Length: 382
Image (tube, rainbow, N blue to C red; front, side):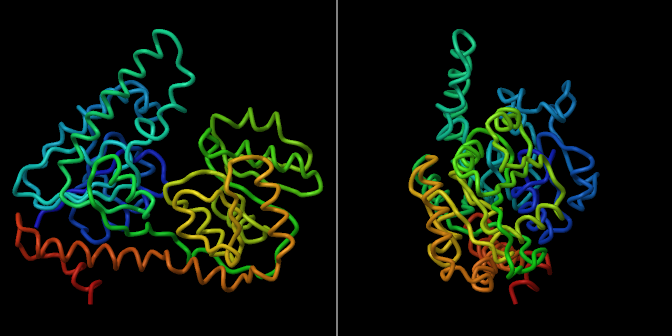
C-alpha cells in the first residue's frame, strides 16, 4: 500500500506538525506533500528532504516566510499535487490540505485541526482591519474560500477531529461525522513540580484571538500578583504598552525556559477559545493548575476544581474573579492528580488510537479491502 501525507505547510513547528510527525512514524515510506516548507523544519521533524514535495508557491517571492500572502492561490496549489498512484491519503489540515484531489479507488482520511478559521468563525474578526475597496476584495476572497472549503470536504472519506469541540464544527460547517482522537502532547518531557512559586504565567503566539492582551489587562488590575508572558507575535508592542510593572514580557523562549515557568507557576492562565489547546495540557503535566475560558477544547482537558478553574466570559473581571477563586481554594489542586489528568493525552496513546483506527478502515473500507504491508501498524495495534 502506497501512502501520501498532506500538511498545509511546514514552516514552523507547532501542534499540527507534531501530529504529522507521529502519523509519519506509522508509515516510514510515505511521501509528504505541503504547500511550502523550510529545510530547518523538515530536519527538526526528522523527515527525509527527498520525501517532502512542495507546491509552486515554494518558488514565489518571500513564500517561505510570507506564504499567507498567497492565500488566493492555496486551493489551486493543493489541487496540483498528483496523488493518483497512492492508495491511502492522510491529510493533516487546518486550512486547505484536505482539498487534494483523489479518485474513487483511494482512501482519504483527514485529521482536522479545525475548519479554515479565518473563513468561518474568525471571519468578522479577520476582516475588521480591511476597509473600502480592499475590504471588498478580502470579503469576496473569503466568500469564495468558504465555498471551496465546503465543496472540498466531500473529497474526504473519514474525518478525525482533534477534539469533540472541533467535531461539532465539522458537523456544523461540512455536515460530516467525525471521530475524536486527541493530538499527541509530549507529556513525558515535563516533570511534576509540587512546590509552586508565587507567580502566574501565560504563553502563546501574540495574535488577537489568543486574548493575551486580556490577561495582561486583568493582571494590571492586580498589581500585587506577578505575571510572566511568554511568546512573540504582531501584538507584542501593543501588549507591552499596557503591561504594568508586575507583568514581565519574556518574548519567545526556548522549550527549557517555557518548561521552567510552567512547572514553577502558581497557575497557567489561558483566555483563548482554542480548538484543543496543547499548552494547558503541558501545564497540567507539570502539576500546574489552569485558569481557562470555558469554551473550546480546553473544556475537554481541564477538570474543574481538580486541575483548574474556568471563567465564563472573556472579560477582565472574569479573569480576576477566577484568580481569586483559585487562591481561596488551594485544597482543590493536587499537583500529582493534575499531572495524572495530563497523562491521558500522551504520544503513546495518540499513536495507538491512530494505528487502530487506520488499521480498521484499511481492512473495512469498501473502496479498498487491501491488507496493509506496514508492520508498524500491526505491531502497535497488538
